[in-house]
Image (cartoon, rainbow, N blue to C red; front, side, top):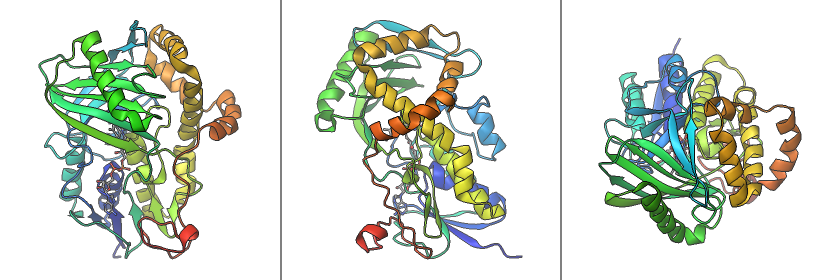
Length: 378
Ligand SMILES: Cc1cc2nc3c(=O)[nH]c(=O)nc-3n(C[C@H](O)[C@H](O)[C@H](O)COP(=O)(O)OP(=O)(O)OC[C@H]3O[C@@H](n4cnc5c(N)ncnc54)[C@H](O)[C@@H]3O)c2cc1C
């Protein structure tokens, strides 16, 4: 029997994970990507594939779901955190890496290229420079963030410094967020990830660079400015008409620290599974993703209350742990406490993005605000 053709908008981790899963099940898949290559909104950014929400290792999880892990990565077991007073805290994970550092963008060794390579080898058609306005077939929307709930701004650079990760929790460098430095194989990313204060972003970036120069002797060669936005939302629905919405376009992302790669790939896989088996996509993501998303909203609301003194307490607590990965996992599981706190947290923390996707059964918009404006075109 001929399988139906599936159209996917967006060749990020969400869209490519969906494409690979569908192609492996024998579907004909066409991915449209607005830009001229994969990962272009990141252009060499170093990021972390988080490895704490599940006991299963994130790379094993990818392999289990048939996704390529043929990208350059650095297993990060330990790093250093600082508070606003410059106190040092060692963060260590023993059982497994806390996260895997990887590169985003179009380079040969990046996550995006590994997924693209795999998709192409499975016969997926990928059309670049093809910004979709409408989906002509039933499809998947994987087109990234819609609003800026947080921004991460700083530089990419080359360096002779050793590999590793460093974090500073200080509202004067990264309001409501954290400043970070990642180095892998002679390449680095330094960023201020802020949840408020966007208008002063350059002030915070300058302070962040200075702080890392002072605390760890950061030296950047050939620094190139880079920044991006993150969008967090627990959507009322991840359907737009008959189309399935995945990744950051749905708002799926860790609301505490902005780790979205795993949610992107998970939701892509779930959407594909729904098309393959006929299972209900809403039921799938609510079961698999919603508990973590809710816990991360509670974590964010609590983090927002901390302030610089609270950050010192939080860092001390985590650096005392033998295995911070295990401690983090507890914070991402919606136990009774977090379930009780959730209504308060939801009220305290509201996304910049209104949940405006349309609910028309036959709508095929790529970015739809139909029910508000009556206009189905983005
Ligand atoms: C600076 C920064 C640092 C980050 N660091 C981390 C980190 O360390 N760890 C982590 O887990 N997450 C991190 N994130 C978040 C993570 O990168 C995202 O959550 C993840 O990339 C989302 O994947 P996605 O596939 O949903 O969207 P994207 O990766 O944004 O991909 C969407 C794609 O759709 C394309 N597109 C857009 N509109 C259309 C259209 N109409 N038609 C066709 N194509 C279209 C875009 O060009 C893009 O290629 C970071 C984000 C930023 C900005």
